[in-house]
Picture 1 (tube, helix red, strand yellow):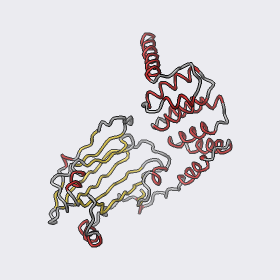
Picture 2: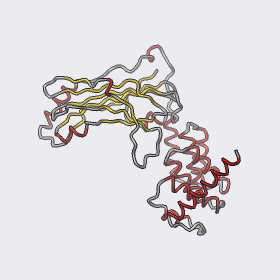
Picture 3: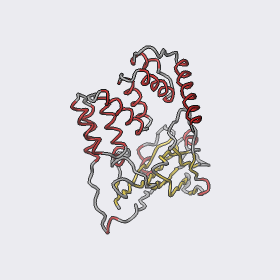
Picture 4: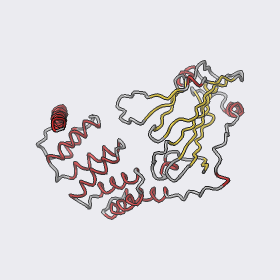
Length: 314
């Protein structure tokens, strides 16, 4: 066990030295502002390794704690960001930035009470952004109706008449030169409890050009696989002559798409291959995402992740 820990320490040390030398950074210059400039263009992992090295060398300088916590917060590593900000606050318990970061970490992990406490401390220390964050926190504390006999139904199918929408669209846009136009977009939220919900995304777009056809050839929609799982996926094409092609279920897949620089391992995609699309075709889809039961942000998602929506409560 000792040998494993020792080897890990050696590897981490080598990574720190390599990252610092690659960035041409002098570890013996205690200048957070200069370090920030030198880190420009580096990956988040490189930044974290280098900043962590500076924290170890200059443990009393809270500027490095703030730099590290902000990066951890930006990549949604709330546990690490909270740990880093709280360590910084042991050195200066009146630092408005660290208090705000700590409050945001509590907020995004569903601890509204501590989020409120740290936001108010940050506001008292002079950080004005905390006032806005307190407003968001208050708005997120929406009382969800208690379950009743009339609120147990699943979201009803309210798919509109896409051809009728197309007719209305063409009436006023006969010379539209855009590659495609969305005729309909909607997100229904099915709230299961104060912490979990399902949602259904429905959309339909009219393809106007050949370039627009190519845009939908490999259509995909991302989702957080930690919180949700695609439960029902439907896709189809309404051709200009009114005939309808349903995408076979075997062609509707969930996949990882490797993206350069993407560090969010929970991000996955529903992929719908719309084939045989031509100008005048209407592509349409309905995707129902079911909650995995994992805790989501404390009611924040309902309003700020989706904007306007029609809510259906269980």
